[in-house]
Amino acid sequence: MMIAALILAASLVFLVQFFIAYCRSLLAKSYALELSPETHQVTGIEDHLIHRDDFRRLVQLVELCPEPGNDGAQLKAVRVYYSLVKGLRAVMGSLGSVRDWTEKEQASCGYFAAVVLDRRIAHNRGLMAEQIANHT
Amino acid sequence: MLGPLDYLIWLLGPTVQAYVVVRTILSRDFLRYFPLIFYMFSAALLDVGRLIVYRTYGLQSESFLYFYYYSDTLLTVFLYFAILALYQRVFEEMQVSRHIRWAGALLLALTAIVSYATVHQNAANMVNRFVVELSRNLYFVGVVLTYVLWGAVLQLRETRARIVQLVLSLGIFFSASAALYAARNLFPQYAPWIAALAPMAGFILPLAWAYVFTMVSEEARLETARIAPHRSQVATAHR
Image (cartoon, rainbow over all chains, first blue to last red; front, top):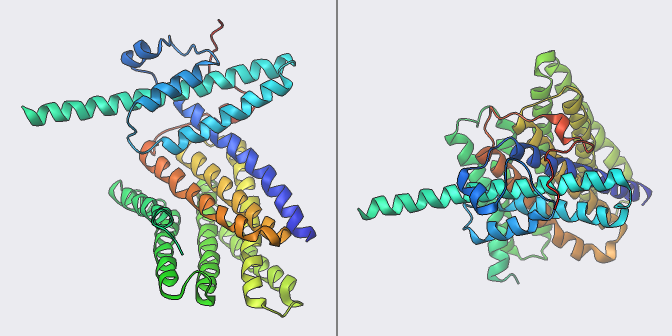
């Protein structure tokens, strides 16, 4: 019983740590990518400048685009991470350093959503070009 | 009795696993990541095997329980070799492959012995309990090994995005599975509900690896320092 309790407690701590690191690796990878002019136009994002509340709006735009079928699970993971960070801000937002950090993290989640949107726009554009080519 | 939706969920796992195998064959990553892909291939086959055993003998049959738990143990051991392969990739420049292999084999044997000793005194229904305990312990050893590997990745400033994401997805899978097995030990009265969460944990690896082998190129690099919690990536706009 004792061993099982220890394993449960330790595994949950490790799970949270791995999950946060995994989400941050997704955010770091997306940060290296540049958005296309179309996505800049659709989202109104200039350079990498994003407001922390943009995430929800960007996810709504992503949901309007048909999924190419390979990034849905990662977007869900980032949504969970965004909620965790938002919860942390609600609880400890009075601390200046926590407020600044959570603001940047939420903005990073927004940029990730913008990259997903960018990829889906490119995918749909490709499909449309293919269809037009088939009809002519 | 399972409904059409249950069958769909059951077959979704092998479908994504098969996708990962085919994708790596087509992109010629199969040999480079052989222990990981071998695990995916075995998991797909054994999932289909479980479905066949269920259809033949039923969900509550002893045959299904034995097949389920023993195939789970086998897959955990395969995954164990996958994580050792990632150790070799991370430490490849340090020429310590032989030591890693020996340490891995020793850890596997020790875990089996400790699990056997734990259950030895309780002879009733020992075989089944042994398999559950062995799986729980193997998953937890997997968690610890992955955590140490993640520490090495950060320390050695490993930049290969694929390695980083493979290690982290393994960490999530191992820790979720170890937590589920430990919770089943601790709260046997809720075992059916906890067992129902196992397929969700089972989806973690196929989905994460399908993403890695589709969206992340072998040449992609990550700044691991950016993943440390105190660093942030994006400049924020103020309204």
